[in-house]
Image (cartoon, rainbow, N blue to C red):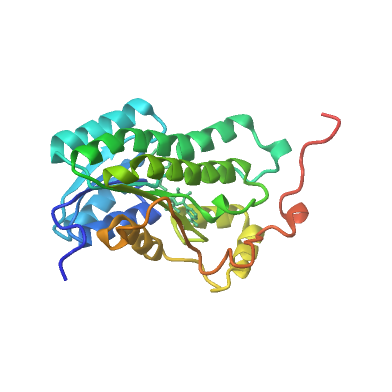
Length: 273
Ligand code: NAD
């Protein structure tokens, strides 16, 4: 069988770690040349080395995905270096703090929205024209099971990921007649550096989450990447505007991760303040 992305050009944000790295590697194994973007230069270099070991083209750009100028210049660089773009994965993200809304700093809310949601808007805004000029293609945005649920303590994260689903649907609608499909993946608990760091920050929440997964384990980044790559490929040629949940069954029962919220994330803001 011929590789799914032979002679194709792909772009991945958050490619310096976790799910983004696994997507980039999977694309390389399917024949793509991959443009890797992340704010973490060391992570980018490691991912590029993995891709080059597969004899794949790997192009690095260190950027902040929430900056319009940086995203615009990155897509211009893809156009001038590779001349086309067939598949884009807007995947970079952060979790933000675990705090009830009364205690959640506004600046943290703004930062989570900028990195997780504004970035997806900016990515698609500049990717769509290049994909159109390339004769069509597809985009996959990384949402989360937090786009389907209301995990207590994660107002910024859940709001941003619900927003990613909304943007995905709008841009799918706008581009379905132009040969561009736009979908999202909603990973559940996936064992990447982001989750490992969170587990250390909040072990009680981590234990609850693991227990709430019917599969009784976290996902591997490659398992999420496989779903994202399938969505972006011609194998999913009639799928658009869809958010594919990849969560070991976490949301089957409603995805309630925080039944003991009062104990795990107690309110710190007194009524007197
Ligand atoms: P990760 O921390 O391993 O990787 C995220 C990458 O994004 C990092 O390399 C980081 O440097 C990069 N990044 C963060 N902010 C950036 C910015 N402003 N500009 C450029 N790059 C930036 O985390 P991950 O688990 O691989 O997360 C990838 C995506 O998957 C995120 O959108 C996350 O919300 C989503 N997700 C993860 C899980 C999970 O359980 N791991 C679950 C649901 C959704």
